[in-house]
Image 1 (cartoon, one colour):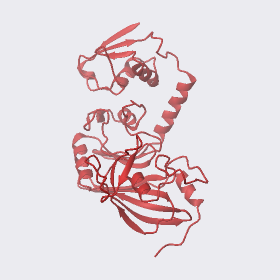
Image 2 (cartoon, helix red, strand yellow):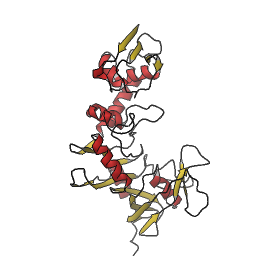
Image 3 (cartoon, helix red, strand yellow):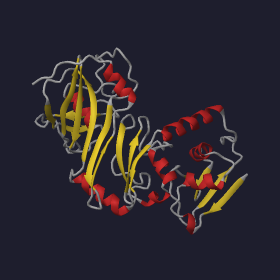
Image 4 (cartoon, helix red, strand yellow):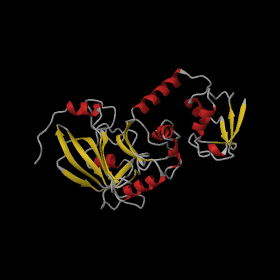
Length: 328
């Protein structure tokens, strides 16, 4: 059976999967997303992404009897829904104003979909809780996202709730006018109490999907490499480990992870950038990197200062380590 829907003006700007979940009430969100991804849903006779934003007079064709379409919720899809609900429950709303949210992103949650069209990202959660955010930002697939954290990193994020606020925070980040700090546990005993890492960062030329640091004076820098600045100070020293507070003055992809690896002290639990020669006596099952501090002057000229404690798993790991005396 085929259904055809013509989008009305009142539904313009709504996301395809969200619109269909309201229209096809007998289907779950995950089933609808599977229908879209399997090609059972066409928009203007073309396959569309889950995150496509609809326009007035768009025509949606739905094949409800396709063999590719799941019509019953399987145990696996139930498990997936439970996992998705669980990770959404782990999102903490720290503060809300008329202009922005401060949230604490849990580890394992992707901020926005990539070219793989992932679902159940932070963007999905934002759209379900704050539908008007769909018009905020520069990219329809990333509404409200003015900065990001890696999927495997937890911690604080600011989410603009309107376009004026988005432009405000975009400029703040560009001018490096936001105090953003992280806590990381690294391998090895860092000799300096404070230091600044200034290696350029670019895509690895030997391995796809990762980035590499290139010293400023190496002569190996090209026009695609970008300047990156990372500052750190030592919080605690342990036998074979060091706990750092990190401040980044630029926001490059994987910046902290790449810089610390190049500095000779990769982050504990970072399977992407960890030297294979380093053996872990205890599996942390995540990267030890947490965005723990965010401070700025807001659009209302008020000063805001937010802190987030280390997640229990990270605190527990540090308690198992043997402390070393401070270097003066």
